[in-house]
Length: 102
Image 1 (cartoon, rainbow, N blue to C red):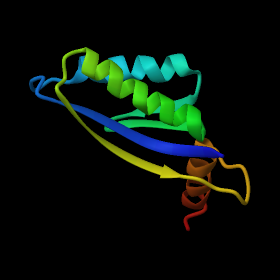
Image 2: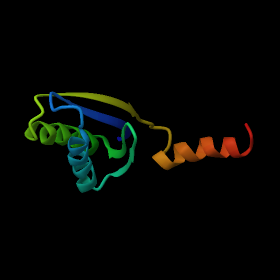
Image 3: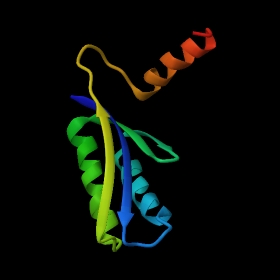
Image 4: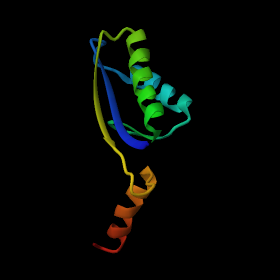
């Protein structure tokens, strides 16, 4: 089963700036080869359920290895069984409506 997730990993107890931790997690995502899109408050990732969840787990492992004693993660996810749908499809369908003024 494929899944599209919105992942936001926030290390706690590491100070105010967390960009180095976010970058480390982003490297994990990039290395996975899964389709992904970094945005201001997280990353969208799509692919097979087990592979995507393995990336989430690995992000936690890497951020803990960097010294974060705690991590809070927000995860939104969606699946479909009626048809294939990718991240870009979801955005395109809304953009088409906006273009038509709907």
